[in-house]
Image 1: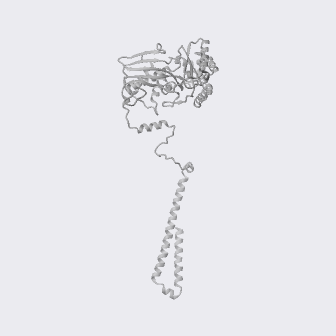
Image 2: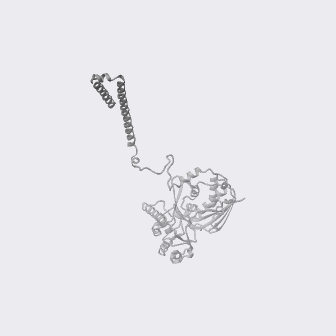
Image 3: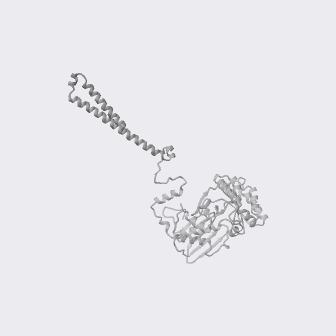
Length: 454
């Protein structure tokens, strides 16, 4: 306002001066000036004054706006001031999805679907489920780490007019044939999840997984019964973000180290996050083989847990934390030479070796000397598991001197004979696949769409 007032005074002074000059000139000039000339001069001065006033007001308004913008920017986050312009559009109302956000991707995919799964929701009359053996703990991964083994059992469950269990194969004369059988418990849990009453069922089990030998026969029975019950009830479960089948199986078993690899295959690392069980796959290195000594005598988990103390020392806990991290890293990097240190343990193997399986550590040392990458007690025992390397394709087309499985098997057998422990050695591999339905009535396949023959 002060500047505007000064400009106006200047113009007024100029007008007065110019008018005085004209008026004080010769009398002929004064006489010649008519009223029109005075009007034009006055209009020009007025226009100049208006232009000056407009310019001054616009300048003040622009200056005020710049000051406001500067103040707003000074209060914003410092990171925003240095951030480079992004070429990627990010919707402000949606959470950013990264490559590892698998569960969020699936949640959005499900939310976008409008189809109804009616074909697979109908009850079935019979179903056959194939389930793998598993090797839990893998040394230091007590109750949280397990591996699916390429050794399979099959159970067929069908609607019937009476309850019945028919078993053949491994442990058929030792497994319970009443409703305490874990297949039955799993099926009951499935029908409860479906909100339906379980009808009388007939169970036919063909067991290739040794019973009570530390190879997950109980977890295989739980998962097989649960999957069979779900199929018969015509009920499906959510997986992404909940892993409902894992929740049912782990709640029966009490821990995820066996049931997770039975369900998903491969090597699984499982935890309880305070709300639910969850598990992630650990890669199986290529060329890895499993050489296991399976004693003829059984080893019950309850007995094997009974020899463990109620507490562990800080040194023991620290030792196992480091070893399980080392083991998982060796698997992820494919460095089989690091497996030997990775499977070392202080929480359960020394206690069980001392009180239950005196052949354990002599067998571990002999197998390692023969070329095994690592050796550990499978689950609660008594099976001893050795991991070897060098396999390529079908091993029966490969020269034996490129692998170490035969030498390791012989070394384990010699120790078993020295300790008078009867048993057998099985050479196989990890299974990347978990439990699956192999036949069902009525089938899932229809028309031109086929699901692996089921």
